[in-house]
Image 1: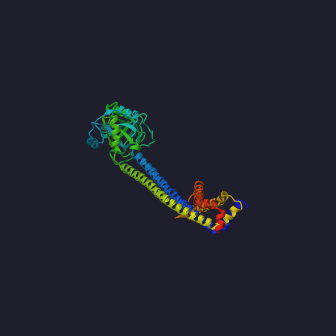
Image 2: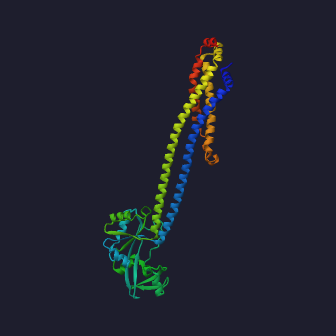
Image 3: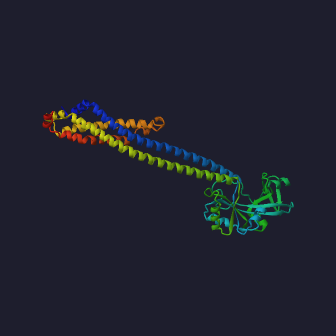
Length: 424
C-alpha cells in the first residue's frame, strides 16, 4: 500500500475528526478574510462617497465661478487705481478725480507681471462744459494698455474707441437727438457718433466717451490719467488687502478702490462654499482614516484570537486521533513503515485539511462580507476574488493546520511498535 493511499484511508476512516478540524480552519480563515474584506469594502464605499462629494463640489464651484465671471463681465472693471493724494470723498461725490498720475504707470504695472489684477486700462475722467451745446457732461477718455488686452478672454463692458469717434450716454444722445453715424462738434473738434449707450439710471447717462489721447489733448493733459481700471484675478477674488499690497508695492504713489456690487456677494458665497467643501472633504478623509484604523485594530484582535483557538482545537483533535490510532501505527511500523512515513501521513492529512479549509473559509468569508448591508452585485466584481488574499488565506490555513498537528504527528512517528502492541 502506498503512502498516498494510506493518507486517503486515514482521512476516510476518521471523517468526523477530519471534519471538525476542517471546520476549525474554515472558521478561522472566514473570520480573518471577512474582517479584511469588510474593512476594504467600507474604505472603498467611503472613498466612493468622497469622490462623489469632490465631483459635486467641483461642479458646484465651476457653476458658481462661471456665474461670477458672467456677472463680472456685465459689471466691467471692479478695481480702480487712483493717485495717492486723491481725496476719496471728493472722488465719490464728483464721480471723477481732480488729481492725476503719469500714464506710464500702466506699462509699469504690466511689466511687473502683477498676479492679483488683469486687463489694465488707463482712463481720464472729468466733468467739462460742452461749449457747442452749453451742456455739462462727463468726458471719459479710455484706452487699452498694450500687452494686457483680452489676455484672459473677458468680454468687458468698455470697448476701445477709435480716434475721431465718440460714444454718447443715454441722456446726451436722447436730449440732443443724435444717433449712430451722426457728425457732431465737441469742444472745437469734429467727431462721428460711434455708439449710443442704453439707459442706466446713473451718472453714466451723462457721459461722452472717446479715445484716451484725444481726451488728453482736449484737456491739455497729454501723458496724464486720473484712473487705472482693472479686473480682479481669480486668485484674489474678494481679497482687497492682497490686491492693495501688491499694487502699492509696485506703485507706492497710488491707492486702490474696489467697486462694491452684487458680484462681491457672489464671490464671498463662492469662497464660503469652496471652504465648506474643502472642510467637508478633509473631514471625510479623517473619518476614513479613523474608521480604517478601527477596523485594523478589530482585525488584529480578532485574527490572533481565532488563530489561537483554531490551533489549540486542531492540536487537540490531532492528539486524540493519534491516541486512538496507536495500534494501527504499531502494526504499520511492524510491517516496515518508517517513522518519516508515519509523519508524512499525519502531516499530509494536516496539509489537505488546511488547503480545503482555506478554500472553504475564503469563499464563505468573502460571500458573507460582500452581502453584509448591501447586495453583492452593488460592489465591483473585482472585489469578489483577490489572488493576493486568496493565496494568503490558503497558505495561512495550511500553516495553522501543520503547526497544530506537528507535535501529535511527531509523537505518532516516535511510537515504539513493541511497547504499543504489548500494552494493547
